[in-house]
Image (cartoon, rainbow, N blue to C red; front, side, top):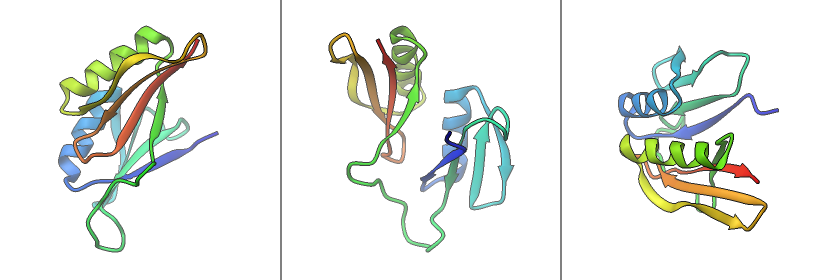
Length: 120
């Protein structure tokens, strides 16, 4: 259902490296101020960009991008991988709604909130 989501960043090179490494993906399209990262253009992608209006990139208060972990173990593994790549903790892996939802939360190097999740 989702084609791609766009994240404003301050350092394109660092953001491309972070997301390529995090998802074992590659830059599929790079037009300078915007890069599409994924495994194929016919699958959901993450776009990193310098904002079009020329203003500083910032995190949306209450905004978050959630990525399926495939399992509780997978969500925790993505969390730990993101931390190892320079993300900061914003909620360690664990059940959020017992027997329903498991989540792990980080902030990417630009402060964008990410969730890795599994529905139990």
